[in-house]
Image (cartoon, rainbow, N blue to C red; front, side, top):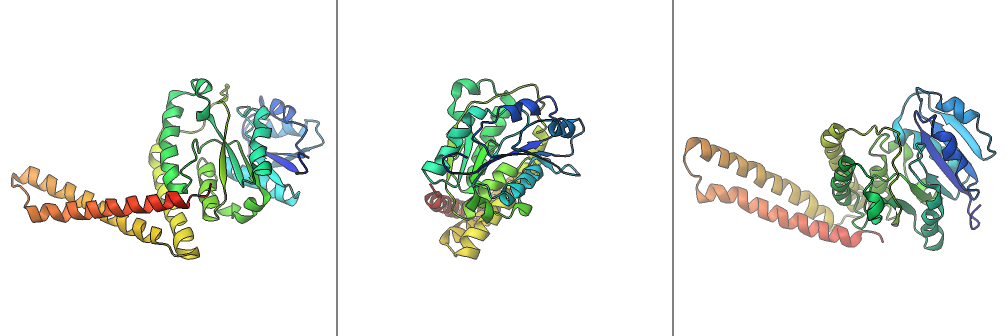
Length: 311
C-alpha cells in the first residue's frame, strides 16, 4: 500500500517479450497488484509473463487483439474487482519510468485530483529525444484534444502513463471507451462530462527499440473524424442532457453557420473565377455574414467552455 491506498498497476502488453520482465521487475514495492494483460501477442509475451515470479502479478490474456484501450479496459475491470483505490496504467514496452510512479500518485492522494497523467513537454531537454514526427503529431493532437475534451489546461493527451481514482473509474462506461490509439483522449472526454479534476505531471520521454504502431495516415484521416464525434458526444452529455447550457446553443448554432459561410463562400469564389463575372455584394454577404456570426458564437462558446473546465 501507499499512504493507506491500495495501488494496482495495469500493464497492457503486445509483442513485448523482450521488455516485459524488466517492466514488471522495476515496478516499486508500494504497488499491491500488477495486472499484465497480454493483448493476443504474436510472440511469447504471455508465456514470459507466466514465468515471472512475483506474488503481486496477475496475468490475463485477451483471446483476440483489442488494442491498447481494450487491453487496458480488461485490466481496469480486474483492478476494480480487487477493490484497488488507485489504478495506474503503465505500458509494457519499457518507455514509462517507474521512478515517476509516486509523483503520479501524489496529486490523487494529497490534492484529491481524480486523474493524473504524464506530460513529456514539461521536460524540454528530454523532449529532444522524441522523434520529430511524434513531436508534430503530439502538438496537433494536443490542440484538438483541448477543444474536444474541455480540459484546456492539459497538454500531451497521448501520454499513456496515467493514474485514476477508483471513484472516477466507476463513473466511466469502460465498454464504450475507444479501444485503440484514441483511448487516452477518450478517457479525458468522459472524465470531463463528470467534472473530474485532471492534473499533468512532468516526466521525460523515453524511447527504446520498440517500434511504434501509430501510423501518420491513421492520425490524418481517422483521428479528426473520431475527435469530432467525441466533441459532439461531450457537448450533448454535459451541456444538453445533464443540464442545458447556453454553451451548447453557442457551439451547435455557431458550427453550421461557420461551415455554411466557408462552403458557400468557396463556391461563389469558384463560380466567379470560372465565369469571369464578379459576385454581387448581396451574394458575398450571404457567405460573409453567417461566417462572422458563426465565428463569434463559437468563440463565445469556447470561452464559456474554458471557464467550465474543472481544475
